[in-house]
Length: 182
Image (cartoon, rainbow, N blue to C red; front, side, top):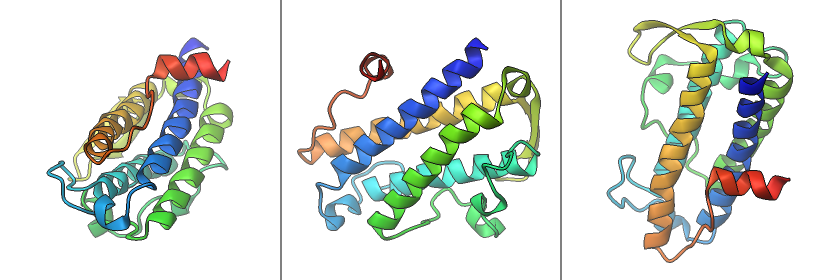
């Protein structure tokens, strides 16, 4: 029960932090958001796209593995291999569409973690293939830990880029979130 509860907290933190990052990035012009600043995915926009790309890939694997419940649907995953295998694939060039899709996905994610998963389910293995087609079998709780950690890693990169452009996204710590959510 404790690990499932932790995943619920991480999914809620994820939404809170993504809202914060998108609101902060929205203060910049589209030109600045899309400017190559030397990050792994080039720009703020490119990094935000990558996070969404990775999330859609992982959630699609859960759907394909039979763990999507009624909350995650078949439309969550990419339809073409060229999209799902390219981490630089741009899902949306329009920032408002990217932001809207992020919010919608985060809300579905919270619902899915709360209602579609249980302590028993998260201890099961997810059978999936990497973007290179290599098969893996990994406990769901480990996949979800990676899922949230991946977002945190790239949001940290975005936070640096925001600071370099005069935008302070505020406190980003998980422990701070747990204190303010009550």
